Image (cartoon, rainbow, N blue to C red; front, side):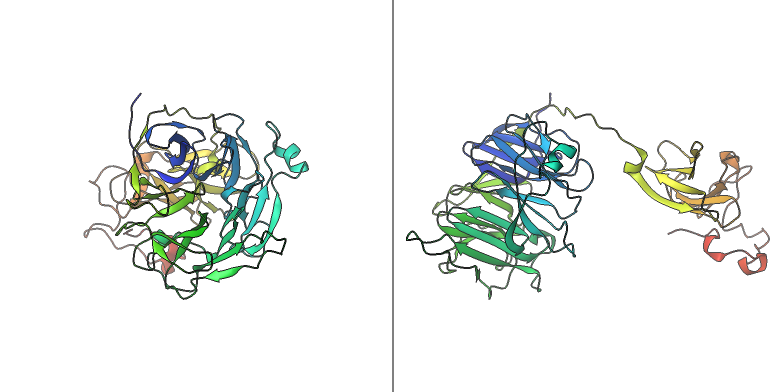
Length: 429
């Protein structure tokens, strides 16, 4: 077993445990640093793990079956199951409600992909998945009455929202346009039974991007790059007393989260912990080692998981398809697939059926630089007899180079031969 460091992202903290993402898996580790262990082993892109308020469960976003969905498991790695069935690319886990429901945003059921609404997902019983879970309401959850939001934090002290922000600020540094995000806060109701006030927008005049709104110690904490680089800031719930708590320069502080008192985030692949908004020493970097074996959950890999491109023939009954750098001829009704280019260490891509000629062209790097290879769709011609355009290999029997050598007769124009110029061999740059 080898202990290695990694690029750590999306941290969250609860008690003496930290969760984060590394190697496309969810990990847990001691809050003070040390050896981490895996919670998931799906071999799929994951993000935003959030530990429940009682520390017994952890929720995250996973692309195990394609689109991102909300998943949950015990912090011991047991009872892992899927919570949502939205099939929407904008789905993200945000956290937990005070009542123990998972908060997730999605654009499912909305007219536009940027209309993401917050939902509260109940945690279903272990083993209740698929149709049984959907019939009991799992996968839809409870729509929260906040309108379109991109991030939401629900605490007993109030609600903090982020709207109109569609990209991580580190992806579009120092952007100052109209989708730079808006911060909204609604404090909890007063103790004498008066209704809670409405939402108030904070820092509307601050020229910068916002991310990760958090309610920490009676204040609103968030990430912003209005001073040039993404750092952690906080203010009172009325927007006054703006403070800066970190001093990163160049690399952005990203994906911050909190347990109500501490703030944890990642910067340049390292995890940093701010022990409190009044900590005079600022944040400290946590050291973790990834020592767990890479045991992967079994998963069936099919060709449609890696379909790259396809080109249908003139009859509509067959296509040339690319699968993981190989080219095949596939009939649409029955019959086996026919391999046209399956060469170890060689990548073939962008197959195109050449009209009604019975031939297929594709781009290949078999001889170094990219070139176009042409072969019959029935795969009958041996490889030495195939034609590659765009490279100049050494002359050999049965191979035609393009362009032709100076001594060769010029090729007839496509117009003279009645052909189509779009598929004629040419140099690929």
